[in-house]
Image 1 (cartoon, rainbow, N blue to C red):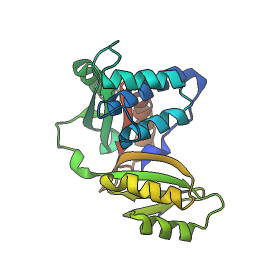
Image 2 (cartoon, rainbow, N blue to C red):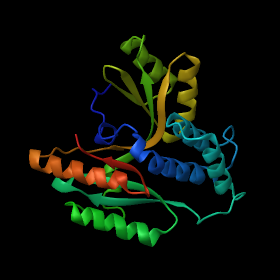
Image 3 (cartoon, rainbow, N blue to C red):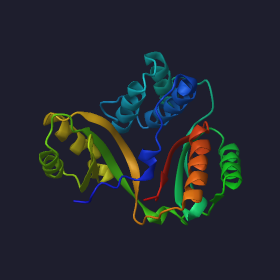
Length: 238
């Protein structure tokens, strides 16, 4: 088992505030729309089920979720066609970044992301320059409330997890992407409370930053996460 060193993307997640709720709902709606392109039934489309669960967890109104699903399946035609794009970049201190976006205008999104990086000590790089530093995983966060950490780790491994990391409140379970649904359902059957479930990226190599670069990096993350098209930012900061 690895010790808990959960990557910076989780550490930088901010609580949802009223001021940003509308923007967050737009991002979540785009996530649901893209997932629904693979089928509008969450019982048959696990990715859509995850997107819906995430939206519900943020208290997104039911009617907005339903509209997002219909937009993805083509039943509702009230805007452009959204696609997923992942940009590769380096931030301050040469921190590797993968910036996951959902956009209906790839030229606009590319230009705006490139500008944000340039203005905040980063740079966009060619495809393949950074992606090899990460591996795709399924990630499940379990609540440890009332649970024994050691027993929980063993249960996760028996359910098919590749690795786990633990802190005071949660157990982070990592799986092969294709095993995510199986492991999640097994843990639920065993009575574990699932906090979140995602398809994610884990860094294969990690780096650290000076105090000065840390402040610059935090500022870059903030402006990236505030961008309307950015869904997720993964990094290799230790």
